[in-house]
Image 1: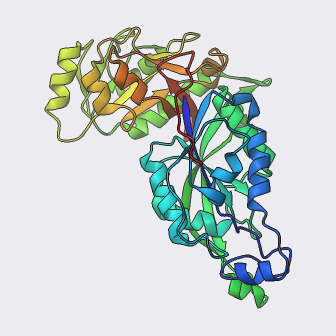
Image 2: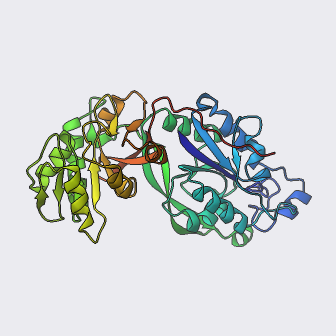
Amino acid sequence: MLHLGLLINPFAGLGGSVALKGSDGVADQAMALGAQARALPRSRRALKALASIEGKVRWSTWGGAMGAHALAGIVQRFRILGNAKGLSSAATTAQDTQTAAAALLDAGVDLLLVAGGDGTIRDLLPVVGERVPVLGIPCGVKMHSGVFATTPEQAGALLVRLVEGGLVRAARAEVRDQDETQLREGAVATRFYGELLVPALGGFLQQTKEGGKENEALAVAEIVAELQDQLTIPAILGPGSTCAAVKEALGMTPTLLGFDVWDGQQQVLEDATAGQLEDWAATLELVPRLVLSFTRGQGFLVGRGNQQLSPKLVQQLVPQHLTVVATRSKLLTLAGRPLLIDTNDAALDQALNGLIQITVGYDDYLWYQLSDSLDQPQQQAQQDA
């Protein structure tokens, strides 16, 4: 079950309607001029679009206007992690946003849904980095950053697509902001601050299409080229035809239904056992890369056909050192079902629930859900008043 975090800047875009060109530092003035808050109603528009996945996700948020007010009455259960200190005044601070974001990340959210503007996203950047993807609900005035969906409803629709197993690309988007003081004086100048991971529509790209369908052979060739560039470090490569193609490109002798080991320059183990994999990994100074695919149609990533991966090794390598390879066509054989994990350690399996990146081409990645259960039973989450 995916764990989503909601974070709202309650005063994003407040100055737009009263010609203040934004809300940075002028929230009190904007409210005195009669400005109406945009973030709460726009956040609720996005959340209503998520009605079809109620019970398939769990939510964590911040208190009051920074999240809980938007979820109340739309989402049945959610967890409140804390409250802003500055909400007695007309504006939350950058520190409020950063404190809330850090708490949501520490709680293990898989994706952060953020309602705000460029200033909000800029505040998040140093805290979030590339730890989780971020999706913006557009509420600000300037909106130069690439994190935001076009509309609140489209933000909701994209999350529905992600939860239901649609093709959702793992992309990077620029974080940009401009000096509102200069803007009010008529000078328009944006500045680049960095990039965040974002979910984006992930249909078939033109270079791997023929007649409206994916050319799987070309897609596999792109995956192989991407992995050749990456695997200059030690790696464990799993079973399956896509992994076998990577092994062959590296000059290895591939075991189609087994695990082979690469030290960054040459093959060092063929058809390795669980004990051999653990012993080899223990000799390394670097943590090795684990390259896996999954069973077409079934979706087992770990647990069927690759019992050579012990729970100890999985805990060491997944998800931080995991590369999953598959074509888009292969993902579509799952019909929206999550990838499955069964290490024979129930607590570990549940801890690994969440989003993973899948390499589907050269510099081309998708987000997909990893689960220990097809049923994904509703987990208990606490709702605070």
